[in-house]
Image 1 (tube, rainbow, N blue to C red):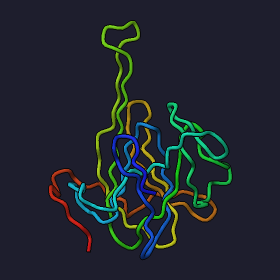
Image 2 (image 1 turned 135 degrees about the horizontal axis):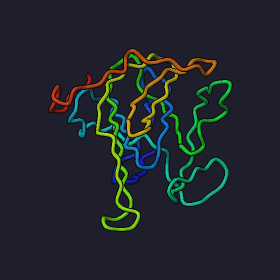
Image 3 (image 1 turned 60 degrees about the horizontal axis):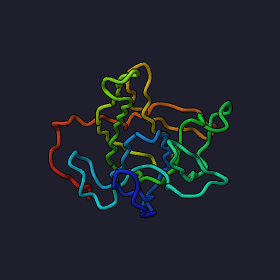
Length: 190
């Protein structure tokens, strides 16, 4: 899974060594959600295993494909359970599931920006953005998690929940915001 994707960002590749957990990432095409499995600080761009948490874009349509803004994505599933009342998340959002490192801190970066219309046009120009935020996470081995950037009524909600075996969701205590000024240079976790 090394395909280059939208915005010249490398696609995140599953953690394959060491302790692992599963992460479902729900996203819209303009979400920018990146996982930095070896980083704990802002300035994370030199993490060699980092990538955008989005499934692989493909050219053809068929079974298990999702289309957002005319770009087709293949669903990537690891069988994380859904709540009993939800057989599948909202079909207007794409989701993919990844293996992430467990039992160590790592970094997640999230942002969103949308604009449409043209200044002076009848419809006008509108834009909305969620500022870039950084979070550290420490997942428990074998557990399931769900990450989402919710946009509702002009408010951005950066959400990480643990998914129980029955699909129930609870807030994650090890999900912590990283203050922008706290770390200005790359810091790799040993």
